Image 1 (spheres, rainbow, N blue to C red):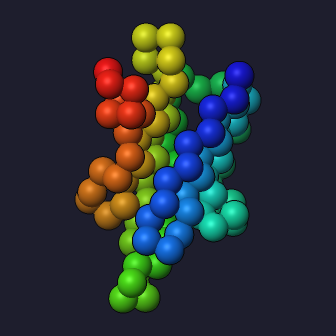
Image 2: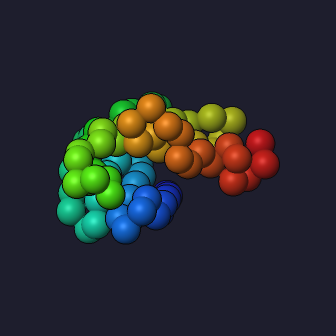
Length: 89
């Protein structure tokens, strides 16, 4: 099993990769965080520069919910992506 979520944030690309054995957070192709091992839920953390050249924190929540993987991506305090909205659930 492998799930990949890709989100554009301004000029940047945030990519989350989830497999049975790990989760990874990439920003513009650079690995920023990784969780190794089998987890039902996990959090990944990173950072991205905004249009003012300041860093904003990224937080990713990945979890198993009703036989599917769910992903939520926050930048700062704002939710910018959720699989729940994408799948209509």
